[in-house]
Length: 448
Image (cartoon, rainbow, N blue to C red; front, side):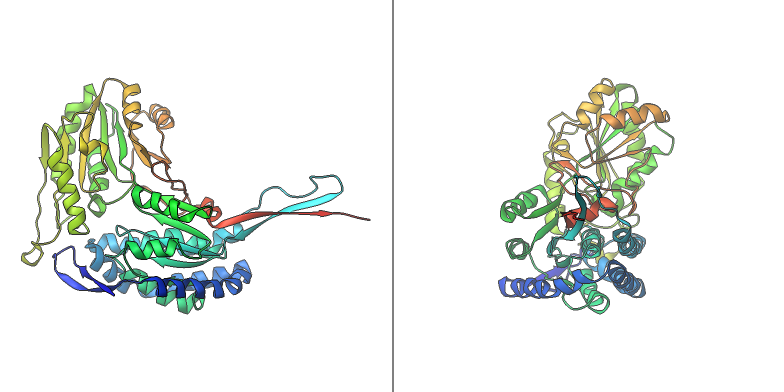
């Protein structure tokens, strides 16, 4: 069974994707279970060497990965190339991070006994990732899972299986058979994987998908990274580079990032300036030149619906400049929506496109309350020349990650994860290792 693949830059069909069903999913999970004992038994340094070898292969096949990422997402060359570079770094980082991780307390804790804690892999991890960062989201999940001794069955998004299939080829060479497998498919494939005999599930996607994963997973370990709708608290003394920096972050990947800036909140005294200067900065970002298209007709249509339902009193919009062959692609212009009611759909729903909303608060307290007013709590940013003041505001924002005078600044060493409707898991950093491990306490009675 297959489904058509579409090039988001042109809207034209570019091939077909396999839709894995129960026989394929069950076969992959069974093969993973067979491969698990040998992979788990490897000393940490040997697993690290194999993961480094996988990173070498990704780097060696860099251009192919970039081409595959661009085919499914339409990303500009520089964006796709930078993300493949990050994936190489992620596998190298987690290869060594697992070796350096420290266990919790051990030693002489009970009279006449010695104790210690072993961190053990959970086993077979089912990984389901979205279409906005196909390879990078796979690496965020697979790298720490593999480094801690688990085997992985990966289900990429239906519209972007290309780079994951290449990753499976390179993983077979570097890691061994069935240590990292890919089952391409649609939502039904993901549900089959979650409902199979995997020991844990790592899911990155929508709230709706996360709730379905939780319901199907029962008491098994689940790690969820869901939506964002991220606030930006813009104080009157924001730095001069604020406008350009926010516009760049808002249109990166066409705004299709859970951690992208979405809801700009100002004080009354700097509201007009923010609307004007953000509008100018966003209008200067040209779709087709500075950023790519939406991923699919469905995603473009969703953004169009929210914008059509919005009651924004003022809209500033940029331009779309594409070649003749790309006019049927899913291109959407950068935009700023302002003069919005508090219950506007563009505020309450995550736009997931190259659009910023701007709202006005009477004081900092109300600005913080507005930032915390939606159920998602993934990331946020605060902008002010007074760093101490900005840090006080950041401390009051309910989010898993808060930037000051920057946005979307991330690295493998720093944890990323949400609260509330944004999920429960942690990606990146050594903290991500525990998403895929279970502690076992061993206590020995010591006798003479």
